[in-house]
Image (tube, rainbow, N blue to C red; front, top):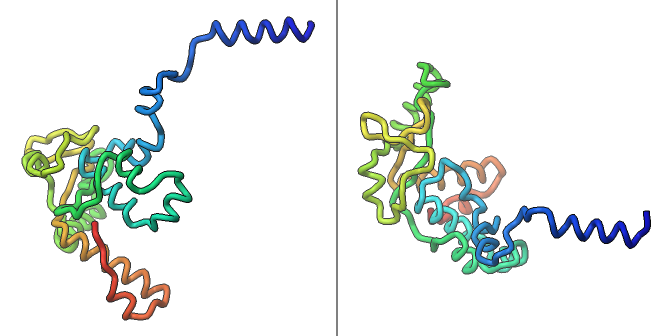
Length: 194
C-alpha cells in the first residue's frame, strides 16, 4: 500500500471516529484533574473537605509549591474553591462495627478509644447543617434512624472540637519528633492550624 493512501485512510479515520475528550475550553476547565485532586473521595464532606485541602496547601512553602505544581498557592485555592481557615471542628469517618455491621470486640474497643480518649462524637444531620461552610451531604452518606450520618452498616461520620483535634495533631507530631530524636524544645514550639 502506498504511503499517500495510508495517510489518507488515517486522516479519514481520525475525522470519522467520535471524540473521546471534550474540546470545549469550559469542559476542559471543568474536568481539570488538578481541580479535583483530593476531592474525588466519596467520603468527603462538601465544604469542609475543601477547607482542609486549602489548609494543607497553606502549610507548603510558597516557592517549593509553585516549583512542584506550576501554579501559586492562591491559584490552587481558587481551584479547590476555598481559602485556608481555622476550623472549629474535625470530621472523620470511623468504623462502628465489624464488616457488614457484625458485632466486633476489636471495633468496640477502637470506638471506645475514639469517643472517650480522642473526643469524637457521632455527627447528626442537624449538627452538619449548622456549620457555616455546609454545602451538602457527603456523597455516600445516608441518614440513619437516629439522625446520624452513616456510610454503609459499619461506618459513621464523627466530629470533634477543633481545639481537641489540634491538641491531638500536636501530640502526634511531638511524639513522632521524639521518636526521631528531636530535642524537646523543638517539640514544644510546634504551632498548627487545622
